[in-house]
Image 1 (cartoon, rainbow, N blue to C red):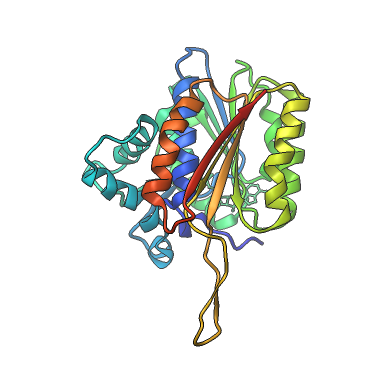
Image 2: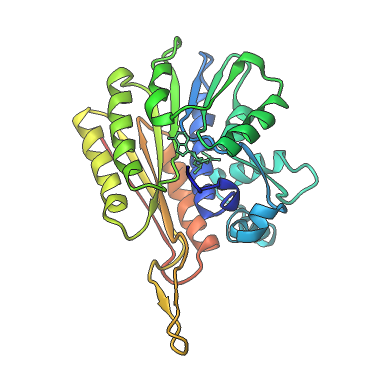
Length: 299
Ligand code: SAM
């Protein structure tokens, strides 16, 4: 079984990118009255304690949402809209300030959805699925939310297209196994065939591995061939180079240096919002001179 637990990574720089994009996308899609279905193919546990054992061990939020929060307090100028909105949503879960509680994609999404919208959550890890179930039960959302202990890649397309023909699909695997990259492509290709007008948001890690490098290129080809518009945003916070200690010769892996979000059929409002927010994200979350961001779109 998988060893990846999102609790170790909750609120890190990749979550800042992913959840800023998620919120900006949902805000736009929810402007229309017709019901929206959100399919979260890899949901995680839903809600995280940043002062708990998992997050405390890795401390990744300190270089992500917590850093952004303290930067925002000290900043002379207001944050760009998409970043301010991200912190506003995190703040809704922390009425006393700070970010002791960090909402994962299921809770962020549910927080923004209206009563007539639907949320389908897939989580395969037994412990995370149990925690997700328990967290979601507290929302007393009834039939609005379905939690499925099923393979998101294999099963999520059964909800496509939804009756209202309006859906956002978030595909956020852990990429623990190399085959996840190919499965993302296979999943998106199959989903697009069933439901070509849905909005798809795919997160991926930018790491020195050919599959990770190829994924956005292949997603671009897929979107272009399907005649769909796309948007690709990346955030780099540090160099990906393995550092060798001169004295001991010990090598140190830098941890996740960068990540990207690839969207198919993105809202037209997303690009200008991210053009303003991404450079600020890189500046405020950057850990060395390699910090950078990029955005491109097509179709
Ligand atoms: N989307 C979540 C968020 O933003 O808060 C984080 C998800 S985490 C990156 C990926 C999750 O996918 C992990 O909890 C892992 O257990 C789960 N997972 C891995 N393979 C899966 C699969 N084939 N189907 C469903 N869930 C899977």
